[in-house]
Image (cartoon, rainbow, N blue to C red; front, side, top):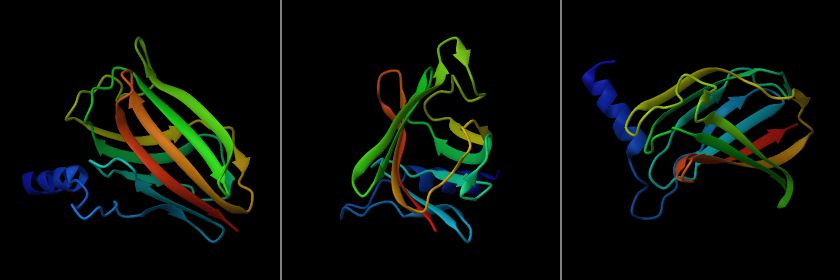
Length: 159
């Protein structure tokens, strides 16, 4: 990646929200005729990139994703919390250890503050059919000190 391109990428990922309280833009993670997944960073200091390669309401096991961000924290340990809501009511809360001390599950485990986390590959999931409706998904990646690495508010619309 050229110096100017790298500088623009870093600037775009680290640019804080405007002083007027503007939120980060809403991004499309995937969209097809029956499913749309939109997300917005809820981290006031940085946005990030995320996409789902197979966009279908019939979620297959080992769903392939892409995720890119600049780390603001070391990730010796990394955890993911997911909360699924519909019409303001909680349906599911889930926590998953992604990087644990001596048991790294991914190549980016152990990366340091300032490094780029870029992951392309599968994520294990049970495989399921997304029911029709609109859902809110709150996602938070955090380290062993409970410092936020990334977070997002997502909307899933299935017809």
